[in-house]
Length: 564
Image 1 (cartoon, rainbow, N blue to C red):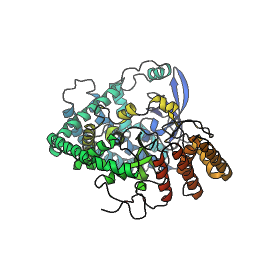
Image 2 (image 1 turned 90 degrees about the vertical axis):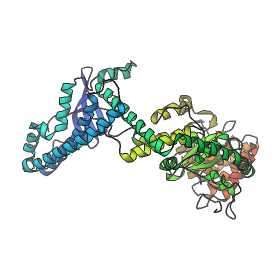
Image 3 (image 1 turned 120 degrees about the vertical axis):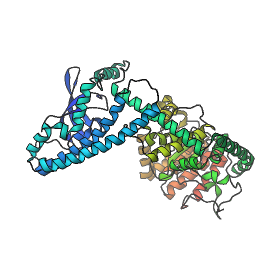
């Protein structure tokens, strides 16, 4: 097979050309020249430009003629599909360094061009495939390859177009891969953007300008400014009227003080119009748990069930108080009460999946904003095909999501202009917490950490935002596989708690609660230790919640309130 070269687009060798040495499915071996010397590199298929040009298997063994011809035909079809992308993007290559006069109008011109290019290329593609079937398919494989290679403009138009673009724009994407590699190795400043990168930025700016213009028109028709302000004022007033009743109910039955942030969350929900509600539904977020009591604070549970288990999933720690459901795999969000009285923050986890509750932080509306920005990022913020105009359904969803963000920002996070991935980068956990953990929290299997003084018999670190895999797997195996070891751990935790050191009982109780998985012995051990620890710490309401949950851990569903 002829020598084949690829442009690497991802990883430390991005921007380099490499000669393919071998291919096995999605794995490539290539030779790259770095600082004048050839270097062997291993790549994934998605790390190179135009992976569709590369056969699935590079082998010196003889190939079946039928397979070769079928592969050639697929490659030609992929070339014409790739040609569409290149021809569209030339629109921005030509304008990359021009003054930005009317970017929204520029995007309109681009989308009109896309329709023309697509229609033209698809006609050429159909003609090329018909000609292939007539002229090339009857030939032996070797001759077919030679014929195709001899006329790249006809059979491999995208590759030919790329070479033609590089002749017109010599530095289109070569602003020095070696300079970039040097910058990575030696910490030098990044070199100037390539023409391709500048064109891509221009495309993003044009699309953003057009989207903002179209959004303003859409918003004026669907949610006039005056209407937004009136609805918000009415929502805030209603929350103030109902606040005392719901505060009394939570204090009476749970022993919790509700934070101001949950009332802002309630006012936010009440202020949503149909489009914002649809946006919240698109994110699969729905108020649940204690929010079900806001419309009727005296609403009771079904007969024989403790109201404190409403919205309480099987693995929820007693500190967790559900206020929102997240749709798939049992995702739900809860206020977190370390001391049984004051809300520390918000935690969340997937009840039906892996992963822990995470470090409690933020507020309910910050949790919504965080989820919203993930939705924004995955809804066209990072296009798989950056030269494509967005689908109209995606545009409509982004309009609704943008409106939801605007409403949310009138209640909280109004000073945070970042969007999508930029928001997560700016407002995630601090580097210190990511590296060293929360200095006040002892590590637990549920990932929330325990706020308690003292050391523990089991060696534990500080709780980080993610689970320590080695710690979790080793301790869970120890507690579930060896009853004798587990009983020894329980005995030591009881002894220490009785002596005035409840850290072992709290952390081990939380561990056993999290990993119970329907095992009565683990459930009983968790309940005993948690009750003991909470009482020793003066967190009697958490002890009562733990006992209520223990009595009802076999409930088939978490909604236990009477029907209205």
